[in-house]
Image 1 (cartoon, rainbow, N blue to C red):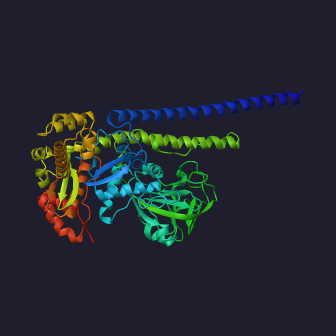
Image 2: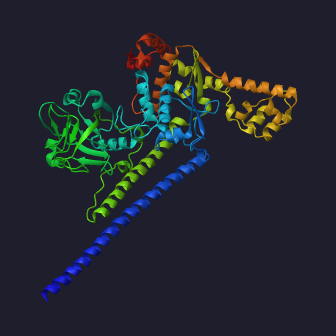
Length: 595
């Protein structure tokens, strides 16, 4: 019978379809599993490398609760290791992770020494402290200082790998989102500086406010946060205008970063056929993308009226409309890659989180589960690639910036204000008075007076005790047998000596007097600078930035920090004293005043 033959063929088709379905499903699951397994191996290998480094160059017993004492440019800052290492994958996290402890530069008291501006470093620590008591609904305020120190702070944030979101943004506070946006912008060579032009909460949600601040500004990035938590937006490499019409922008794109229904950061590229309608200009509307329009900002609303017409579709539905909680437009300046990634371009493409190819050939629940798994895998792969790249950079950073000899650390008494820096920094400008004052021969003479007592081992304590005239030899032996370190030596009291069996009055008095001398020698080992602390501090900031530039850790030549108008004449005199001739003119030529 013909009908039975057709039925038999239909059954065979069902079996073939079932086999194909099962094969496709198994192949897809296997591919995802293999990628996940490979990712776990990469992560384990990265952790092994970090452990090996810690065993060789650090303290494998370091814990989150350890107190870390830092000499930041002459001011002592104390924080827990956990506080300093909260932002994973940053240079700051690597610096205080414990795995480089043996390599870190120390001051004469054994504290970790950082040749940085004190005010700016304290602002960073304040931010980290605030992170501990913050939540997603109430995030910490970005590090901030007064206008005079702001450029120095930005250099420090870059130095320590702390790209805390975008500057002045109320929306992009998460470094992960910042990295994604910067990576997408690399395609146009515009991953450099960001300048906030327009902010709805500050300037008002009106088309006139947008156009008055954003027209004719070149490349711009629009970021929108909706009241239901979505973070979306678009980029245009063509300027906005108030006159009606469309503009071509061959690098324009839309994006969806996070929020309900957005499984992973999604970049919606421009369709080449419609590139002439990349953006739409109209005095009655805010930033508008595409013909029709794909994304339209009108008052407090953002609408997707014809999504997919000019730009490829994404996770947002055509016809969707959302209420704007915040909108920001940044001017984007062409620049070289951020300094933290400048050392290598190898595998940088791994940092790009592209949209996951959506699976639609299985049942709805299976499709959803696979797509969510794929999105999570993409995010994890990007994060591991970022951590791998950061670890490579961390090693270079430690070697160039944070390692060094305690004898290179210089304590300064600037008319009563304590500061600290390195001889390398002070000698950075050849033929300057500072370079002559701290040259090799003179600094060798001063350096021999420095005593890093707190870092002494029991052997060094024993050797010190043996060298004290009139002190019985058995006292040194007792100190050694009790494994007394330099830090413990400075803390010894009468009761402590008695507990160790040193009870003769004369011996105790002699030993305590010598310990007091030792403490004083540490305190008094400073170099006096008889100039204005304000002016000398500005010079020191400049020299530090110049030193970072010479080490390749700062990509641009430093300009002088801002100088108050009331201090300018005195500042010029101090600069001319220390930097005669062309050096002074070069420094003062970049300076400018603030009220």
